[in-house]
Structure formats: structure tokens, C-alpha cells
Image (cartoon, rainbow, N blue to C red; front, side, top):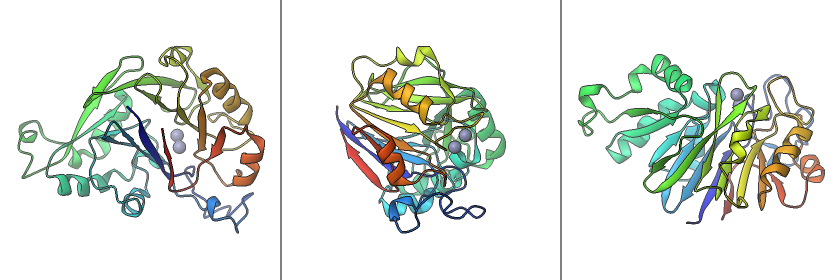
Length: 262
Ligand SMILES: [Zn+2]
Ligand SMILES: [Zn+2]
């Protein structure tokens, strides 16, 4: 089908600079090191999908002029991936319709519990003009679904608590990996042929109990073997030039607003 991905924000939960560590290991004179939190916009075959609503989502959507969405996918129920959800009301207002949000069972439960005022009431789902709101849809790893003809396969990401899903679009046109320590073996089977483009998080180069480091990220890239890779979700330990130098030629660190067509 072809499409494009915009990395709306390339930062981990604290952003760069962060309140506690400032620029950390990042060179302050490189504008690519200024990072808001992680949300990603995917347009594929004309279908417009947002992955995660980070706390910086309002500014990200204004800067990139994103006003219409066909769906929102959630990877997991951490604040840096969810807590901008209130700003979806603006999309409801612009479009005058309900908006479907997809996520794993625990993620959707978290959203329904903590943001119940945003969820479409059963009797109001059809009443889209008066009270446009969010319609939650639970998805499961390895069970594909379609958004207006785009095939989306949720894949299981392991050892990052709470449960976390990645998403494979159209059998591998675009592969989106979210916070992970390990990728389930079943995820690699969701990709047919060589992926055109992949996004993968590198929170710190040396990793942590819940986050993959550079070695684990390289290993996953090797197994998927995509044509192009973008590294995102970087904390202040990840300097743009250093990550770029430490990775292969087909691997690019993300920066806020990076756009790649495939
Ligand atoms: Zn995160
Ligand atoms: Zn997380």
C-alpha cells in the first residue's frame, strides 16, 4: 500500500532535557536531542492511525497538523504512552464522530477505569453528534484485525510491566515495537518477507530490568532484518550522534518530527 510514519516524539518518559537530569549525556547544542515523549503517527493506504497518546500529544499534533484519525492504537498502560488521551476530545470535536481505540485487555481496562468520562456510553455510541467519544476495542497478540482495509497484527512484547503490544502493519510494511525487554518468538512469524520499516525503543544504551539495551535492540533488528530502522523512546543517556555512530547504516535515531515514507 505504501505510506508514511511520523515520529511525533522520540523521548522516554522524562523527555530530554528532563527535570531531574537535564540534558544528561546528550549534547545540548544538537536540536535533534530535544525530545518530547513517544507518540507515533502512521498513514498507510490513506488510513490515519495514531500509536499512543503521550502527555505531549497536543503540541505534537498541532506542529504536524494532524486533525483527523481513523483509529488510535495503545501499546501499554504507562503514563508516558497514555496520559495525553484527553486531547483526543479535540479529534472527536473536529470529526464529529466517535473514535475507536485499540489495546490489550489490561490496557483497555486501565483506560476505562481512569478515563471513564471519555468512553462512549452504550446508548450513546450511535449518538455521535451530541457526544462524540472513544469506543474501546480489546485486541489480542497474534490475532489480526483490520482498520479500513489495513491489516494490523498485535505482537507480544515481554518483560516490560504492564503487558505490552507491538503492531505489525500489512504483514510487515511497517513494524512498530514499543517498550520491551524481549520479543516473543511468535512476533517474528507475524512478518511475511522483509519488513520495509521498523521502529524500536532504546531507552538507555545499557538497558535495565524492564528495558532492552543496545545489544538486545541489535539482536531484534537482526531477527526482523528490516530494510530501514528507526530507534526511538530515548532517555537522556542516548545522544543522537552516539546512537547513530553505534548502529548500522540502515538504522537512524528518531527525533521529534522525523518523517519517513515507505
Ligand atoms: Zn515508555
Ligand atoms: Zn513503558
